[in-house]
View 1: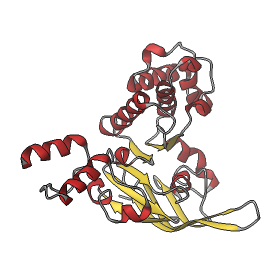
View 2: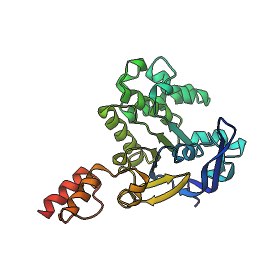
View 3: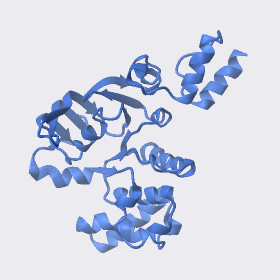
View 4: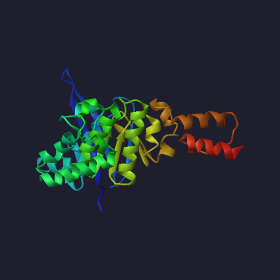
Length: 278
């Protein structure tokens, strides 16, 4: 069975303001299986968002191919079907709110797809339940917190019944409470609902939630593996990305002679290892 998303020799050029052609993606070969949770990390300008926008045909390759669920993204006949399969949630929830109440906003996508009214109501109910926003269905979105608005945006994506959702730095504009609410929702979508999740993030602690981490630099994928391998790689220093907080503390403790195993990415893992080593 073919991967849910795969790319072959993907390249993408864009035209700068001065007319120069800039190569943003360079010969990317990649396969993402259905149901994976992938974190996409890298320095600013490394090509993370550009790559992700190829997965739902917001961009099409300059060279090479991108396939989603057996559909070629560069074929205009497939664009609508691809976007029904792959949703996106962006940084600023304010830019994704289009209606006067929460339930109207969540219904917007299915309505534009021509879904029958009875089914729209069912989809809205299900989506709000999944993200924990049922009690706010009649609230005006502008009265909600940042984290709540982002969960409404996620519900809107869910109501279109996608197989995959791409989250493009969805917590970057949120406070700590809103960030935790959104991250818990994302984890649930993958672990309980089985959605394919692609999380673009600048936070190495957020990247530990994924089962696979892709690190990009200069339009290429330079690291690809489980978080305990990628996030502790020496390459992370060259990329200027740092490490998860617990991993960095563990590294410094090892340098002081405390015997700790590799792969300590969370505070809970580090605390457990310290108790064992004493």
